[in-house]
Image 1: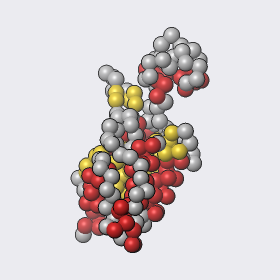
Image 2: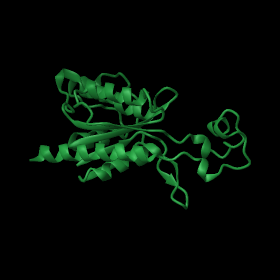
Image 3: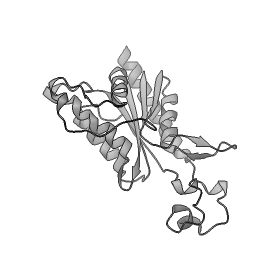
Image 4: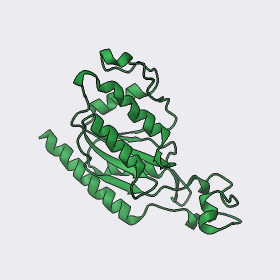
Length: 219
């Protein structure tokens, strides 16, 4: 089983015509999973209670985090999975808070050289800034700290600014809509950025590679 985790707080939402309105990260993680050809499970961190590490060190004795929230259940799914596809967006030049908190908690797995995620296959979906993406950098850093395998690949995808669906974007001089289109009477559907065909092509290649590695490891 391949586990997909989207750290975005925005789940995939479409209009009547099928145009993606928000949730690009969510959408691309699911897309990669579906294209691997392997059984998969998808988890969204949206609405989950996941706090950051409390630095209590209670995990030092047994590598089990004692913070009572939704993190442990997803951790267990990571243990069971043959591979993990982790996606997160770039917020203000860093990984978003959901993604940071989730990965930060893997500190609880590092004591006394336990490293239960060592060698775990993985792939990354990073949305937001495409070049030099800080979300990708942080995910890689945390995966390396757990001695997980080098990512099979990375999908970079431009996000859809919240300004397009906040309800005020057409008149807000501080937002992305006005900066790109000027002041508007109404935001037209064609103005909302969509995932480009070349991104899907790269996602197809990544998914095929990941699925092949998982299948070969089962032989």
